[in-house]
Length: 443
Image 1 (cartoon, rainbow, N blue to C red):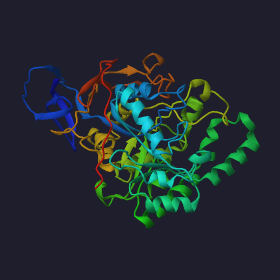
Image 2 (cartoon, helix red, strand yellow; image 1 turned 90 degrees about the horizontal axis):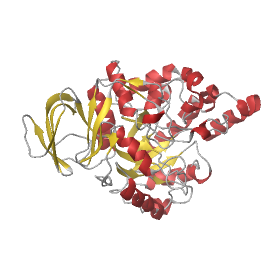
Image 3 (spheres, rainbow, N blue to C red; image 1 turned 180 degrees about the vertical axis):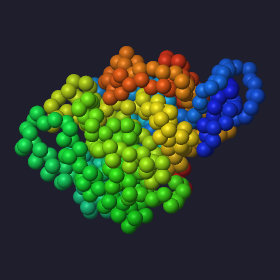
Image 4 (spheres, helix red, strand yellow; image 1 turned 135 degrees about the vertical axis):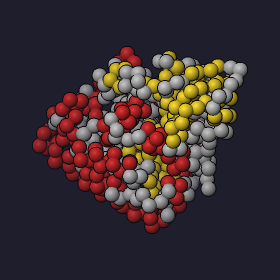
């Protein structure tokens, strides 16, 4: 099927140009002016056409936690939000510590995912041989929880970390929080406040010190062994100073990610939103919040993602020490960043760079992340002047809630194409063939 998008404001590779884009089957076949075709035509006058967002960190909960979310439900929320490709984490039940379990997730996605997909291999204290079997052309990377986890998912043994960093030839993505610091803080606050502790103390438990005491050693290990290290969800001003902007992204060995909640919220918002913004790492001060956005603009932080991690509202309403961390964001990340564009905090060209181009470059994804002739047709139309308010009735994540409830966004996603197939149009999901498995270059 051919679809011609005409008169769009095309945002691509640092420029905004008015023009037409022809989608033919799975690919973009023409980008230009005054194009014509026999087939579906969309007049996008006044509307931005951007590459599909690539979210490098999501938790879709399947298998084992499907009361919270499934690959099917969360991929629907993704395409409604303009996210055409996702990279999903291994902390499911069972955790993804074997190639067999990894492939089982791919089989689910090949049947159920509306978006394009890939999955991280997981790391435990004793699965190095399984890790080394990984086909680097078919997965995005290896995930290590260097904090904020339990049981086999927490890997903090220095000998194990050295073996992994020295021997794994692909990208390692790390959650960095220093577990002894967090445990000590937790014990201290639990003794003082018991189970009824207010969530506003969360950033003192999951402290800035806990983050830096994990991020710094991870970077030192990566430098020692020449490892490709990607540190996820930077949450402190001090951490932003660990990263460099003196190389182009395709030459960097050590990279980092910012998440929308760490740029949108700060610790003053706990009073209003409570457990709904309890995340690990914690949302911290307004100073940290500003430093993260500054680091994004200065290229010390390379990509913007969501850490979409849904829980049921019932679970989130439990007392502090029982309520899980994380929340749903994937449907609203693009429109939230468009709000930053409207406020002058970031240009739309830079937004597209951080959400679309850079994930493709950093993870070496084949033929995605750009509006180019020959690339896969992952594209999104965003109307910058289409106000709407987030409400339970329009939230597509299975958990049914969002920390953005009540927020009115000026921009709206009107169309999402996934590998050339129209998957979302004017508020309606269009069921059809699933998305595609992402492929990666190994050079």
